[in-house]
Length: 487
Ligand code: NAD
Image 1 (cartoon, rainbow, N blue to C red):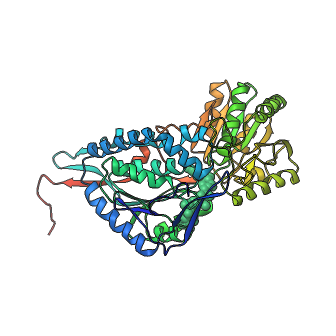
Image 2: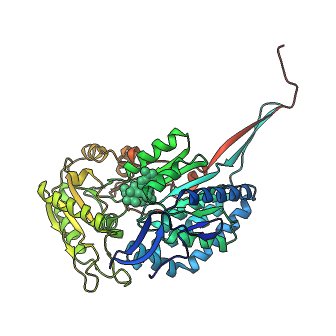
Image 3: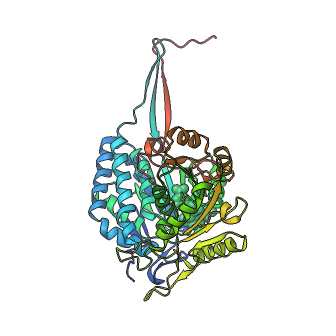
């Protein structure tokens, strides 16, 4: 097996195995070749991880923030040195083209480590003068944080959670998606090499049942999930029953609004990035593309022409722009939505079929697909597909498009394209979404808080807000006089 790790779990600074857990097999999506086998955490494994994370927390919370920063910065450097190796691993695990993983996965993880290293030592408290007596405030870490990942950006998600958690002085148990179990283990190795004390960052594998048991563990102080809305609701329910801190990064059905005065080539490029990158398996994708009527046919013509030029194929070939879908289950779901789009009356402009790639016949490759004539009530316009399927909707005026863009349970992301900056601000201001762009799409620099409104989540990753969400405030009243007691 091409990518078999030394053990299923990484606990207390070393690999740990327990074959009594449920078997989890990892397949390379382009060929369905078995590349690794790991086992879901049993109760003893979870308890060992909790014990290690408790020990790690004792040491790490007393480590000066500037020293924590040095460790995170070293980890970022190691990640960059190993970018190629990590990118190949990520491509094998997810099927995403190497052209993408080389720039968007470990590279983005390294940026998060570096950014939170940079602000680790800035979380100072206050001195509040009461005219004699005073109050001190300080930020304290929460304890053991549980990170749960989705399969589309495995090492990026692990790093986006670990970086602020560790910068704030917490320890972490990270559970990767059972579809992509590999790269978080490499992150754990990198942290160890960078000098992180044992037990501060642990990786524990788990299916849904094991994951639910982790969330319920009384010693977990915070849960940070990246996943779908239904999973988010289950996790929130469990975490709430113990009043655990939580952040939830969930799904979306985000709008891209293209006004007639837009730079149309930029708008087409952004709509393509926001629907076809990672074969469309991105939470923040702009899958509802609203185009103003007067430019609709021009937009569709340019979009089709550029979509037909996309190179689909072997993800390990750096020329490839579109790889396979992660699994048969996900492929089936996407195919059903494509059939549904046609049967609901949308017009299939381009794509829509499975592609056979020579030598990779077992991979589930789907053509980048565009539907036009989509109406707000169609299921392809309402539900998250998580595949390369773009819905184009037409609109006439500003108020109408704002109302239609907001008519969704989701609120993860949104964009507006126009050269009129007053209109751009005015529209974005009224859009119910947490992560927005004007004249671009899906850029997520680490400085930019990322997360959703409405059912797309609670809390933010990245930006200094993320550090706040991995810490809590302690206020200390300091009496400089006598205690006044009325008896
Ligand atoms: P998923 O919800 O099926 O699984 C996500 C994770 O949750 C996995 O690790 C899974 O094992 C775990 N899980 C499942 N049931 C659980 C339970 N009851 N208790 C605890 N953990 C449980 O999602 P997925 O299919 O892996 O990923 C795709 C989804 O993730 C999409 O909806 C996508 O939009 C979303 N996503 C969101 C973001 C974001 O930042 N907002 C990023 C990537 C993906």
